Length: 128
Image 1: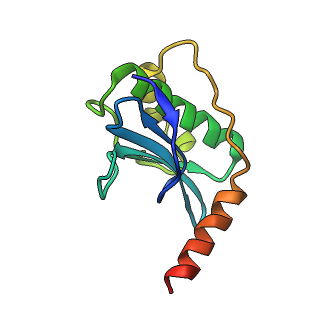
Image 2: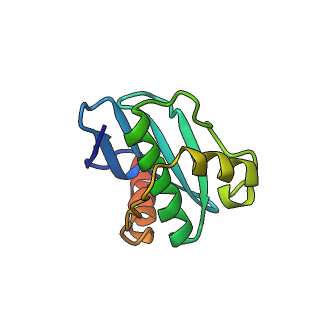
């Protein structure tokens, strides 16, 4: 399975599988960002991994999730969350997802994340 860029919705820097069934992207939260993936048009996410607030750590986690999903094509056997947040503080989680990652891992270079946070804040203001 391969992913292609898609229009953002409630997640940013969104990718959708070629068959349109799975989406993944980034969701800004108060203390950083989460990398999420789930079934397209679902109200929830199967994976909700805490990436922290450092750009390079988020790029790594986003790239790992993309790599695993492209290889597996489903969520079976994938950890829904890391027990300790952010993910790099959870050694068991890191070991597990590293074992699932196929080599070589291609790092996805993400655009500056503050732009997504600004879009999110405008969306929230428009809802009020």
